[in-house]
Structures are given as structure tokens and as C-alpha cells.
View 1: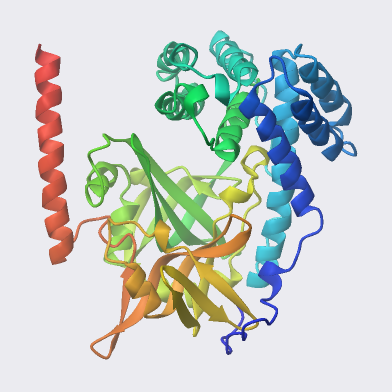
View 2: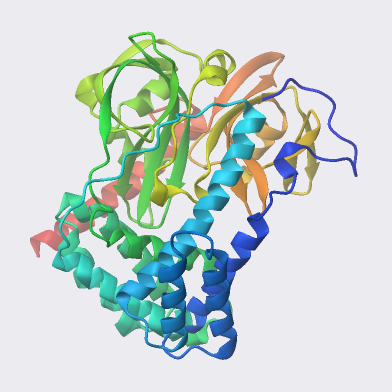
Length: 473
């Protein structure tokens, strides 16, 4: 990021991150139009929804998808769309969001001075269609015909046997998890006819992604290489859902062969009961990723032939990692992050909501307006997304507001770029201290953290005892 300077006064331009992007609003409007059609359902669309389908088709009229999407929109408008037609519409929606993602990512890279790999990710190899994929596609087509207003427990519940049959197959587990979570959200909202408002963009995202993942080849294994060298963690992004949790570590990888360093990620996901929250989540994640402990201890990790995808994701194997020397995340952010190369995004992952670019900010002015926090930077201001700071760590919104430096993820949300803090430097008793959102990931002696760990341990113990009794009966 550029060096610090006074924040712009009210009314002044707020810089490159907020300058208009040609075509962005039109692309998002076409997506919104299709999402309105999904709310009402595509069995017998009304004239207004037919116009929405036409708007989607017009938005991709200059692309290779044009003919297939035009035909699909025409069939859907007549209530005669097949599963292939729904897939074409999902592809058009995904392509528009992918174009928006690319434009926003280019703007973020320009601001951060970041370069990207020139080689696009390799497309996964084709694999034969299987009955479970066909069953999932049929269920998703039935959802589209009914629309979110028409969902009921019988329709939503039809996903359960499909998910159960998919889960034992590692190749299908990604789609099974998506379908399971999607069906759970829909079930919690049944009947759709009683809802006044719909999460149209979110459900449209889940529907379109799931539908495209049912196509042969979409779930094929990603091309991977290997990574040998030093891994320097920057921070942990924790995602929590009622039934699952994921920790994603962002880091700089320095290859042992002296080639250019690059940005990488390492993730671990686990199922969880909805009663395990806050610090308890680390107890579920900790056994599966030694990297969590390394970050908590402030250490580098030495990798030997660790699988690495073209998109920059480490396929973690604890046997190929060992603790390294002490490594301060803020030293990494100041020295190594500016020159690290980033990977391109896989086609199906291109979406504005997926933007999460590691950045380092310092010397900013902070402004608070109620719960809203803003960093003032040279020539522009940047909203701070403190809602994403997890409760499972020592980092708090107050600490962010009092900070002088921040390692964060640059995201795009609700029409604006925002920064999600992963770690900050602040002053405590005249000393500069670093606070990591994931500091408790590997365990902690912090009084607050120890108390939270004990409460979580008690909750997990009770749940295991109950599960054991159920299995014995």
C-alpha cells in the first residue's frame, strides 16, 4: 500500500478503490434481474420475470455464451426449460460475476502494487457423469422451477438422500457439503410463501455454483505442484457456520530454490455442533493443521514437497511440515508481502465475494462513527469490517480502532472495498504490541482465552457423552 498521508477531507475524492468501474453496475444489475426470476420461480414466469431473463441474456450477448443463453432464456420464459437450459443460465450469471471479480481484483492489485501469475489455472480433467451428479442437478432444477417463494419441506428434504450418498466419496464431498448447507438454509426458511424477504443474491450464488459443479469435469482434481521452502504466516481468517468451521491461513511462501516468493493459503475445515462457538472452534480445528500452532507461536514453517495448487492453496500434510525459526507477521508484512506474487483465481471461484487480498496498512488515521470504523489513507479512506473479527481471539474492534498498523484482507462488500483486520499493532503501556485474530489457534495462556477454552471444553465433553449414550442405545 502507498505510504501514509493525511486522510482526505469530507467531500474530496476517496481514491482508486472507489473510482467507478465501467460496466460493473450493469453486470450486477443483470445478475439481480435473474435472481428476481429465481425468487418467483421459472415454472410459469410472469411478464416481469420474463423481462428479467431477457436482461440476463442481453448482458452476455457479446460472449461465446450468447446463443445458448438466449435459447435458455426463451425456453425458461415459456416455462419449458430443461436442466441444460438452467445450467446455461447459471453459467451466464457466473460469468457476469466472474467479470466483476476480475475488474475489482485488477483495481485492488493496482492499489496494492501487486503482480499476478500470467499462467491461467489448468482446467480440471474430464470425468464421466455419475448418477449422483444427475440427481443433484434434477433437484436444483426443481428448485428453480418452484422458486424461493415455492419451496417447502418436501422439496428441500429431497436433497438429504443425495447428500448422504455423496459424502462417502471424497471426489463428491465438496458438492455434498455445499448442497447440505444450502438445503439447511432453505429448510430453515420453509415455507417460502411465508417469507417477506429473500436472500436472493446468496441463494442465487449457492444455486448457480452447485449446478455448475454437477457438470462432468467440474469436480475433477485441481492441478498441483509441490512447495519446498519457508512459509511465513500473516494471519488467520476464521469462518464459522452453525454446522461447520474453517480456518484459512494466509502466508508468504519463499521457495528454497530462490525463485520469486508468492502468496499462498492453507485451510482446514471441520463439522461442528452449533453449540460450539468462540474459542471452542479452535479445539475442533487444532488437531488437523499444525500451522495453527505455528502462527500462534510466531514461527515460520519449513515445507518439504508440500502439494500446492495453481491457485495458491497448500494441500496441507503435517508430515511435510516442521516448525521453523521465529517469524514476526508484521516483519513479513513489511518486507516480504510487497514483493510476493499472487495466483490467478480458478474460473468457478471468480466472484466479488471471494476477494480476500492480503494487504498491509500503517500510519493511517482512524475515525469512528458509531459502530462504523474507517482508516484514512493517502488520497482515500477505507471502511474497516470489524464484524468479521472473530470472538475466538484477543483482537477486538477497540484494539483495531487504537491501532497504528494492520495486516488485513481487502474485500469487496455491498458496493465498497473494505479491509478485514487479521492482526494489528497497537500501544499498550507505552509498548508496541501485536494482536492476532488467530492468536489462540494453537492454545493460549491469556486469562480470557483460558476461560473461553475451559467453557468450550466442558461443552464439547457434554456433547461427546451424549453422543456416546446415543450410540450405545
